[in-house]
Image (cartoon, rainbow, N blue to C red):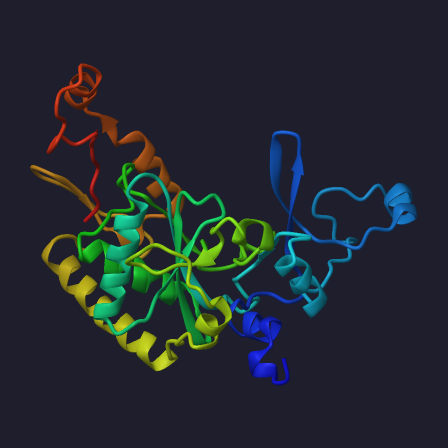
Length: 312
């Protein structure tokens, strides 16, 4: 194409921005698979220094146009690290899977739309889930963007991070800050040729669930959210949370306050992700009535699969 603005690689780079000094590639070995940072391979250096794990002696490959082209042509599946060194990010992605992924993707998109925030739906590589993308005009603090969209869904009652039955999996990036011991979590890039040809790893119409016919034309016209708009949403959500905390739980800095009454209440903002995941796994337990009726073929409408732990 004659213009950079119409060049697929340039369009791709303008949206799917992460760290450029390192990226990940997917590997497969029998039934095992995963992602690893792409590194320069020097057999002599590898043999003499026995480089293993996350050795600082490794030389990481930069994310170049050539590497992106390999991804788009199906030669290698790339994952990027969205959390930049200053703990900002160019986008946020909500990952949904399980049976209700379509319903909850749409609910997420509706909640975001009410805040004037455009969202875009990608069908996952497996075809059994979806990624809802929100793109930013400038890098934005991950701690703020993650709080905005987690709070939007929780306050709208669309899902709870404590609900084991929810199709919501996680947000990308999955951390507020880099720990200093790695690059943070990665997200696989869309439009990998081999899965794209199967109708997956591409952007789809949220109503028909069919792939957008002109992916590049669609991506070229994607709207990005300004930092000013994100700041405004963040402030309104913080005000709402502070008001809620005043009427239910008063949280001290550095301490988790738990209120015991007819319910057990705790402030979600003061709970670490590790504890959230523990509560989701351990305090959502199966409803025996649901299992019994399902096994004998009776109607289970209106009967919850789990007794759920819900956070305040």
